[in-house]
Length: 337
Length: 237
Ligand SMILES: Nc1ncnc2c1ncn2[C@@H]1O[C@H](COP(=O)(O)OP(=O)(O)OP(=O)(O)O)[C@@H](O)[C@H]1O
Ligand SMILES: [Mg+2]
Image 1 (cartoon, chains in turn red, yellow):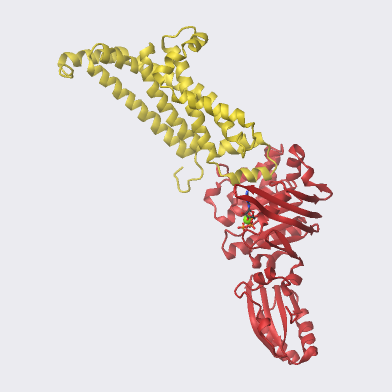
Image 2 (image 1 turned 90 degrees about the horizontal axis):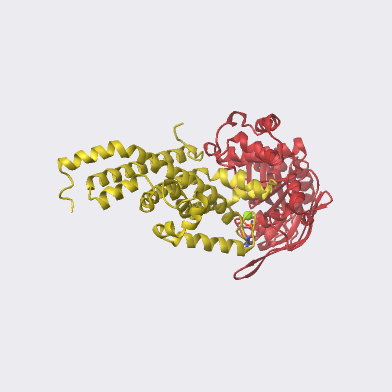
């Protein structure tokens, strides 16, 4: 359990103080994949860096399994950091060491050397699918492969928490997908709590269970991914759900049409056939007024806005029908949003 | 001034001197250069590390007065011309070597002239290490000492090697000057025959050999630096 309470961070710069974080409260259950999403400059990096004390918070506490990280210093902090590892947008591998030696590095820091370290590093390289690259140097690897090495390295000290700061932002969509799959797999197999920092909606939609939306240093919404994205309450959240349009199309309508938002979170079904099915099975014709979904792997991700006529029963039937599909969340959109 | 330089008589003496005195002179130049650079690195490298690590944003911040003092000393030493420095450090040379003339005695001023230079070169190499990599090491629980010895220095090896090459060729140039205070080597021959006895041909020989030595050190150093750099992708192993 990670509990961030009343966390604030103010940077003192030449032209005044910058309030990067303001009274942030977040709690993250053990074994969760938790997304922190926000626009550039929202304070995401500052927030993760305050979790492992790369940045000292100005105020507040970060309690991980009962230990307040803020109180730690020196050796105690260094030891705690072995259990809260991190991967980065730029991979940050040691360029003069081989892949194997990179994975051995955190163990070396902890005093684990020799055959034991090599054995564990080799196992981890197998986990990330790079066993054959053990003796090459990072410069000879692609970005995606380098990030895999970084993941193996981050796992070397058997951490309980893995922090990912824009870990896929430098990668193409396919590679992003494979790295996200790897993170999910690690989360599933090892039960490590993963915190994913991103500015991409698709990343949160595809791997996270919970999400916090950060804007100007404050958490404006947080909760289960489906909940938050199917019914964004704040302007910041809406901007993320509808990156193309700045206003929700609902506002302009005044007919008796009721809108429901359908969120695809790894659903096996795809948008259009689902709507056709709805018409066939239930006789409800839905009007697609907005859709942004994509299929990645064998699942669909994204969201869609449906206009439904015919009164509240129809709406309820449609919602129930859609909800029974795995990975699909449907919610009525309040008119006064 | 060169009119009598290339007569057959001049060539004869030059070849004779070359065969009898040059082997020792080359050896003296090489060993003075190598030893002086070695000692200068021994002092300059840790100081360079201190300049970077001790910085207020460094991995081991030190009180700023220490760094300021260090900076001033380095700048001072670097601004004294070598010719004058050689004389200025006589008392130190006498304490360490027992005498102020002769080949071993020239090592002391060379070290004193070179270590501040090497400290600055080291500083620039280490500052080039990607701060994100240092931060990654910190996030894994590395101590400041571990960051210095396992990240900063190993990651900047190629750059440190090319800077060491610059240092050794500079020291070679300085060592030639030490002929003035009785140091041996190619510098002394050039000075003795060329300046005091107008045997220009011998002086030219000495200069050519100095140039060749610089080339040799530079070529080897550059090769080593390139070979050590694992960031270069398609290099031939
Ligand atoms: N070291 C620093 N000194 C001063 N201001 C800083 C520092 N680091 C971050 N900031 C400021 O804090 C705010 C939040 O920055 P942060 O890097 O956390 O944003 P971010 O959400 O990670 O953005 P991005 O998506 O671009 O990475 C910004 O206004 C930034 O200018
Ligand atoms: Mg950032």
